[in-house]
Image (cartoon, rainbow, N blue to C red; front, side, top):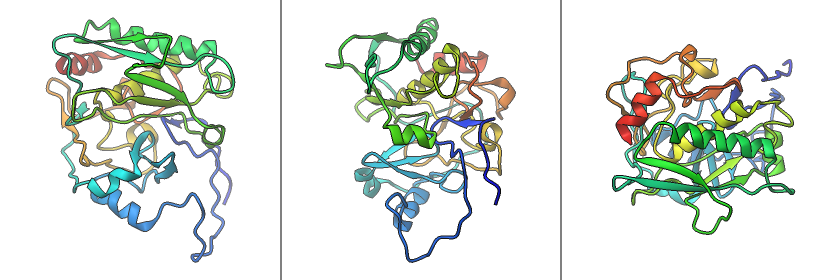
Length: 279
């Protein structure tokens, strides 16, 4: 099979840059292979494992491109469900605001495990985009990881070389945002993304942290290409947000589309409707 360079469309977490169809011995299990039992558990929970195969990631698995599922949570995953086609979705758990809440974010700057000034500028732009919406939540970048609500940590070098761009999880049952965003540190240097493109990817992961599912959750092919693939509501939920239209298009450029072309996607009108409804 000809090797395929996957440059036109980056997945927001896992774009496999080169694919080989070399046959593997069925008796050999590689270190990174996801077992059939794990695939079955994820499938039963409603996650898609066919359009974009899950991979081992930290102490768990990266599914649907950029959603982190700890291995310890597999046993507690209940049977998922699938929903009708609508546009904007939220998870069952959302961030508790008490009327107003500032979510603090920290990202290390410089050094081997820190981010370039361009990446930090992207984070600041992502924060300003949310804050410009005058929501019940706002974001603030802080200079220390101590007590920060969300810590942005750099992916391992091997993960960056795999083409992983970012990952995050969903809010906790106690109403806190997911506490960590793992981001590639080479979006600028290797992919040539602009500050606005970087901001779009970081804002996407921030969206997951406060309870947003992918806009094209019901059919990833809208932004990712390939065959029709429904991510499933899974056990975290995929609840339609009132006021947003049915269907989704790549042309609308929602910041929560499953895949990105690396370009700028500020909030569109439907994105703002969804943000204002939830927060």
